[in-house]
Image 1 (cartoon, rainbow, N blue to C red):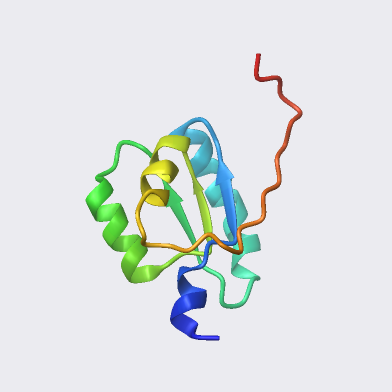
Image 2: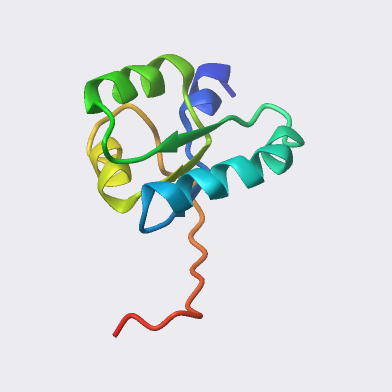
Length: 97
């Protein structure tokens, strides 16, 4: 398989409702992410320039995205990354009502 393709394939999304929580999750998960050979991660949250973040995604790639729903949606609506191998796991312990 082409390394460039692997570089651009998203394997996991970790979505949280706030920038602060996304940052905390990303920082706590970094030691775990570091044990995954050939896998890179990226924090994507609102309040930052979408063009700069999109450029970073295109240049660096990412297999694990951690972020807020709006920013992840913005990135997903581009062709910068591939999602065909994305697995969905949902934590439904909190009520959505």
